[in-house]
Image (cartoon, rainbow, N blue to C red; front, top):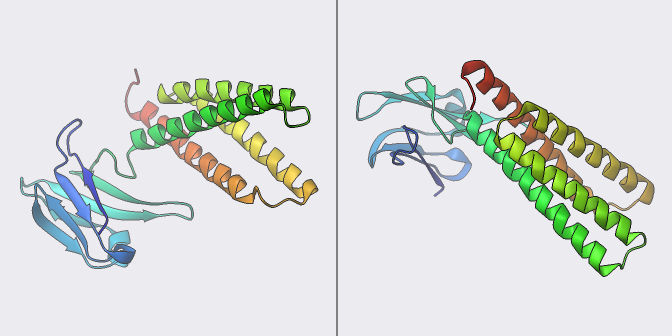
Amino acid sequence: MPKKSFSLTKGGPKEIVCSWGFAWKNFSIFHNGVLVGTIPNQKELKEGRSFLLCDGSTLTVRLKVTILSVGLELFHNGIIVGGSDSDPYLHIKIAYGILLFLGILNLVVGTIILASGLMIFGAGIGLGLIIFGIILGGLSFGVKAKSITALIIAIALLISDALASIYFLSISNNHSATVWIIIRILFIVYLFRALKAIKKLKTTQPLI
């Protein structure tokens, strides 16, 4: 049975545990090991339910479903619970991880191509991937620091890269890279979610 834990205070213990069955049925919420409520099915979970916790505070739980993502939204006394789908810091962390992963991946692949020399124009391709990897890696740390400019540049680069891949795929009639293009599109979607999260943070609190 899947489960996920949350802290009601930053850096505090994981006192909230949510567990559920297949298709989000029999969703249960525990506070410090005590069952505080259940939601029988996905339909009611999407609508959202509020529960009284052991300390008298209120926890609201809702399943957020979009075309490309599914996540749990939790609010404690109306405040976003860290690690839930509405947590802007979570979206920024995911975007940072995506860009760092892509940066390292391009660096590794570029280095292998450059070292092997097995491809035509391998040196140019390998060097290009290495430079692209370095740029994405640098932008990832800008995103981690909540830089809107760094995130916009990263999104523009990944969109350009995805469009170029789609173009070469169409003229080569090679569909083996279709899955990777879909993954890139998902990455871009998550970066846009992070952009929205950073803008939200900038309008609600000063950023360091």
